[in-house]
Image 1 (cartoon, one colour):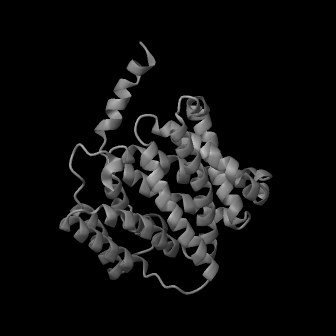
Image 2 (image 1 turned 45 degrees about the horizontal axis):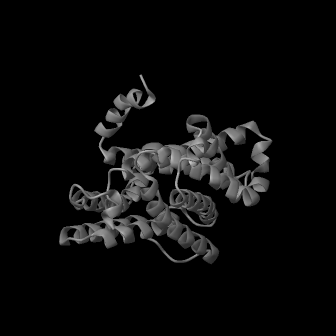
Image 3 (image 1 turned 30 degrees about the horizontal axis):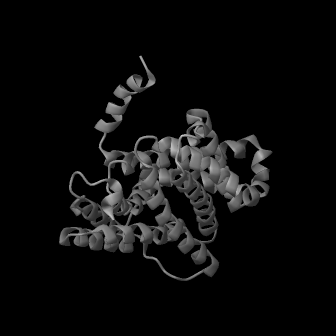
Length: 297
């Protein structure tokens, strides 16, 4: 039996799982990762935490996929896309941790969401989808109650992270499909190298402490391996605008995890926001069958 035949049952199983399920898994781990990072911030500077996250994810992809073998099979355009995604991942993760070091996670998350919802709005070609975006944005506004006050540098980092998050979605859709996880592994290796000059020195305390190093690996697996892989599985089957709109569920997921894990009981307005986000996602209508995910914008 050849390798292609051997992977067919696995491929069928992956395809039978609704893409929305992969997105929910991604959303859950998107917020479990920062829980590990909280432990690290007391001993490791933000750029060091970011590099530990990227490097540990790159190590996992290397052991799992050995993605460097895949690089020589790509054409020039595909190679540049992967290099671009790697640079985006390095900068995006670094800016995210710099931002949450200065601002509340909910505020950074709200600003980060502005980019994906803009993609969803650009891809909304029907009145129903426009209404879905409006409802979702209103729900996020209620949930996050963003106030532009506090550390201005933190907002600079947060808005820069927002712009890079849009690029992550665009480039992530370009590499999705057959071989998408191998392309992602290549991009993560590039990200680890790109972030090395600014992150290694700050990560030094964790490299000398097995407990901190284990936490750093936990951050990488929960924040960069599981969500990025499940993102790829969802992106391969969802139009870009649909995927971008579903990002609006992230604040709702943060509220849910806060209640279940941290016993943070949401207020009535927060519950209203969660309900509006879910309603917006439910109302949104994906593009017609036959269009590729990249055609969603």
